[in-house]
Length: 246
Image (cartoon, rainbow, N blue to C red; front, side, top):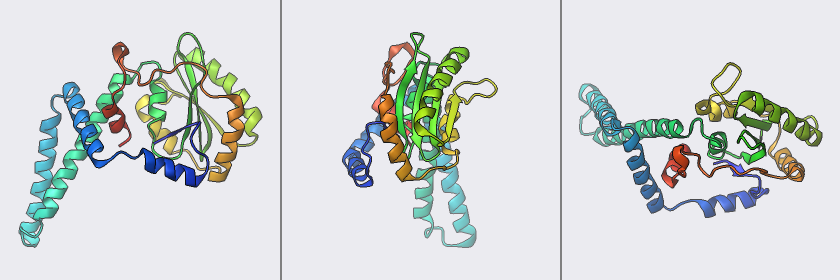
């Protein structure tokens, strides 16, 4: 899960915060049930696709047992494989449904960034305008990532202005400017997380902490970002946040 700019800076503090924020098993099961209910509404074929994946996996493992080993010996493995296959299908299709709901909404990129796994220090909405075009600042091992969303020509202007401000603070640390969109040279929302993860690791964890203190002088978010952009002004449910981080 990505961290906000106000996250603890020391490794010990981050570990303690992670343990404190980790949900219980009962809470996770409840969130999964909620996620399944929400996803099924938007993807009626979900239970059938999960069932087919589970049966196919079970059959393949049992066939291996019939031809090479004892069929009963592989029964636990077949059951475990069937469950895993169903969960993988569920996760992928539910994530696709969640992205489909938020795509094109103000704050969608911030929603994705704040759900990324790993030590990413996210400051949403560090720059923006009244049309809800925005730039989000992310600090991590690649350096500083400035992610803009909105109407391209306005978002590019905000991105250039923010890059100048950040450059005065971070020195030689790499700064990546990313524009979210589906046109050439842009990064689609559904690929934003993958794009960020593929960036090279240019600085150490210690340098990340030092840069975070420097960047704090620039301030955090300066414009309101919807807490979970959804069509019709709906808020993002806990279950959908759970799906996004899996």
